[in-house]
Amino acid sequence: MSQQPVDPDEVSDALGEELVRIARKSVEYYFENRALMPTPQGLDPLLLRPGAAFVTIETYEGETRSLRGCIGFIEPIKPLVRSVIEVAVEAAFNDPRFMPMERGELDAVTFEVSVLSKLEEAPRTPEGRKAFVTIGRDGLVVERGFYRGLLLPEVPVENMWDVETFLSETCIKAGLWPDCWYDERVKVYRFRTAAWLEERPKGRVVRRNLAEEYRKALEARGLLTQST
Image 1 (cartoon, rainbow, N blue to C red):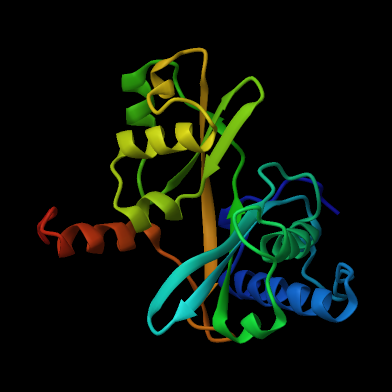
Image 2 (image 1 turned 180 degrees about the horizontal axis):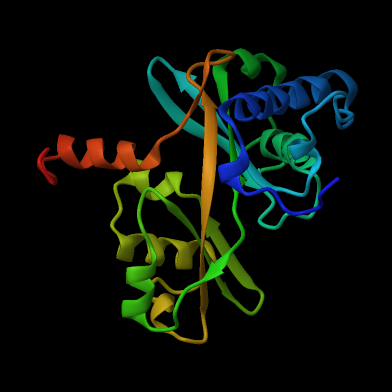
């Protein structure tokens, strides 16, 4: 079996849906057994290759969502399916921003799985970094010494940030100053994702098209004409 890390472009919608279902089952299993779920049998070999992934859990109220937990692996240190199983539990129970999930919440939350590409380092100049990042395609990692912060590509889309704001917010996430990305001693990386989420709790799983979400949001605010 190949040990080449999984690239998000390799993951079909069918496998993306399977990963979302596995993320939910992992949390359900943990409620029942207080242990991590074993790896399911008969999986596509791609899911057994090393893969980096994040699981995002959101509370679903009407048509609105609010973050309930989000944790992941930046590097492909484990088989992709194991990454999803483990970080789903971490997102549900160990995200320091939230109290551990209660069983009654399972019918009111949605699961999203993001599969990450390898990191690509940005140029060291501010202008080079701005040109390096595309909203709707890239996530960011900012790093200096022991300080490290990551924001998924979904975040600037959902918050309607431009590139400079995205860079600054990632600096803040790393515990650094907002304009740290001007400093060539600070490393900036981009990565791509493919993401699938439940449209509603336990509902249909769809692939997110972040570039299209961003375009529609800009149009809705009158910041982009339909002919652009």
